Amino acid sequence: MPTNKHPYPNNPYSRRKDEHMALATRFTGTGNQLNQIHFVHQSLPTVAADQVDLSTSFLGQHFPTPLYINAMTGGSARAKVVNGQLATIAARLHLPMAVGSLSAALKVPALAETFTIARENNPDGFLMANIGADKTVADAEQAIALIGADALQIHLNTVQETIMPEGQVVPNWRAHIQAIAAAVSVPIVVKEVGFGMSRDTLTALPRIGITTADISGRGGTNFAEIENARRPGRDFAYLADWGLTTAQSLLESQDFPGTVLASGGISDPLQVLTALRLGASGVGVAGWLLRTLLDQGPEAAEEQLRTWLAQLPQLMALVNAANLSALKKQPIWYDEPLLSYAQQRRLS
Ligand code: FNR
Image 1 (cartoon, rainbow, N blue to C red):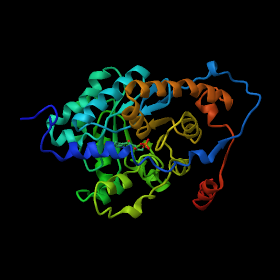
Image 2 (image 1 turned 120 degrees about the vertical axis):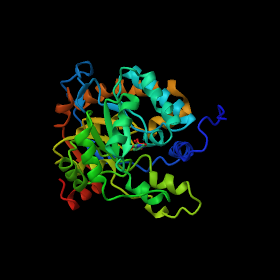
Image 3 (image 1 turned 90 degrees about the horizontal axis):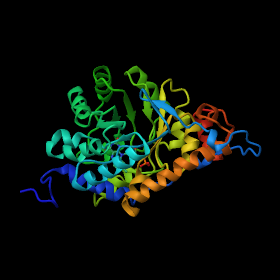
Image 4 (image 1 turned 30 degrees about the horizontal axis):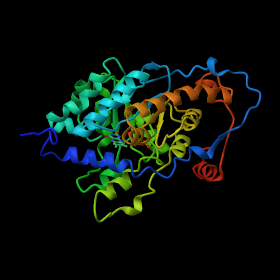
């Protein structure tokens, strides 16, 4: 009989998700390089904080602010609690939110409630479903229906699949994504999970029907470290620094003809501003929010996000930008490592 402590027995997903959540609080990354991008200081601004318009549009929707809560949980009793708490925060602050990968619920129907709690706690909010690129059109439709999703995230996680013994990188991901994009009725975002996206990856997306990408770069949650830590051999320990940072990925995305969303190690409002300056239409938080929530509780996590939302217009005024399109024209400069990267990749 399922007990309260183990309500979803005999499934591999709950244990994996609980380990991911616990390890995500330990492997917090070494920096997404957004702090290597600087705004040129302006001493005589003409914009006041209360005149700033932070609104933005992505995935067919207009949002009052550019922040969103990225995919993390669902799939275990602990994850249900966290999903519920995140959804309550999203509802109160009017933030879009993604649940974690729904493949667990597709395989073990009893786990569905660990995701649907997000819709229960946020009935009218913008909620994104999340699946891997190995999934079929039927899986995608089921995932969307399960939580009444307004959009679908499809994650690309080649590094994780390489390290996990049960993992599989299948070269037909493009065909799967293209089929899903042609079939489902909600907008789709293809996202990384913390290893960033190259210009080459981004160039491939429109050809398979994808016009929104979350570059989710290196520098925050590190799934190479997390997967290695789950195994005694740590067989792929040398992949700890794999991937493109969030800043590098945003440079790689400059020619992307669609909408760019940015995530990966976002841990303060200035990083949000910098990512927006580099072309992002929305900025996602994951690991930082999870750590704050688990360490300090959901009220503290909500309060800190409120502080971010209050400080963002102040920072916009500081750089003299009344709205996000004005922000994208503000002068910036790069520290040498990032400048060198841009030059080597011929991105600047
Ligand atoms: C994730 N992330 C993730 N992404 C995804 O597409 N599906 C998923 O199921 C998960 N699961 C997950 C669990 C946990 C505990 C964390 C912390 C993260 C990845 C997440 O959405 C994001 O892309 C990366 O974590 C990078 O952002 P941060 O964490 O550095 O802000």
